[in-house]
Image (cartoon, rainbow, N blue to C red; front, side, top):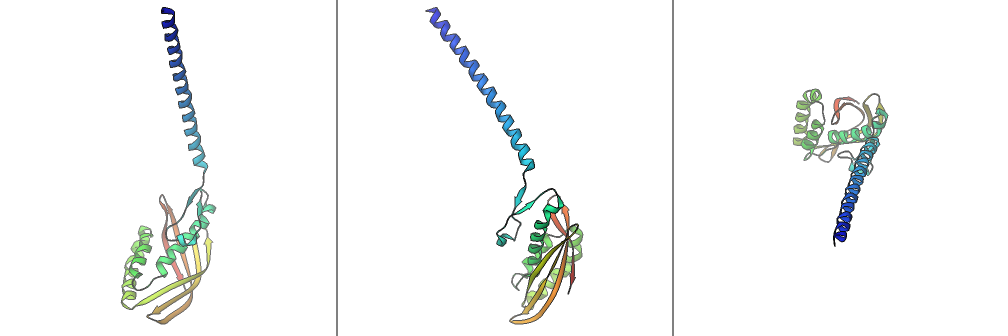
Length: 186
C-alpha cells in the first residue's frame, strides 16, 4: 500500500515539475515573440489615409526618410487646397475653418482674420469657387507648388477664370505637418 502511495506521490511530483517546465518554456516563447513583434513593427512602414482625401482611394506610405513623405505631402496639399479653394456659399465658413485648423500658430495669426472676412463676404455675395489642380510639384525641403485653374461664380455667373499657382510650405511637427505659409501667384 505504501509503495502505491509513494508511486502516486512521485508521479504527482513529476507532473508538477513537467507543468512548471512547460509554463516556463511557454513564458520564454511569449517573451521572445513579443520582442520579435516589437522589433519587426519598428521596421514596418506606416500606412495611412490622410483626412479629406479618401476620394483618392489610395494609401500613402510615410517613412523616416523625407523622400518617402513626398507622396503624402502631395495628397495633403491637395486636401488643404480643397478646403481653401473649393467651396460654395453654404460651406465656405466650414471649409475655411478646416484650413485654418491646419495652420501653424504663426501662420494662423497671419491668415485668420483675412480669411474669415473673405468667407463672410463670399457667403453674403452667394459666391462659389473651385480650383482644378493640373500639377502638384514637390519643392524641397517641405513645399508643394500647385498649378491649375481657379474658377469663381456669383450665383450662376462666372466672374473669374484664371490660371493660378499656390505654394504651400509645410512644417513638420510631432503630430504631422502643419501649413507654415501660403504663396499665391496668378
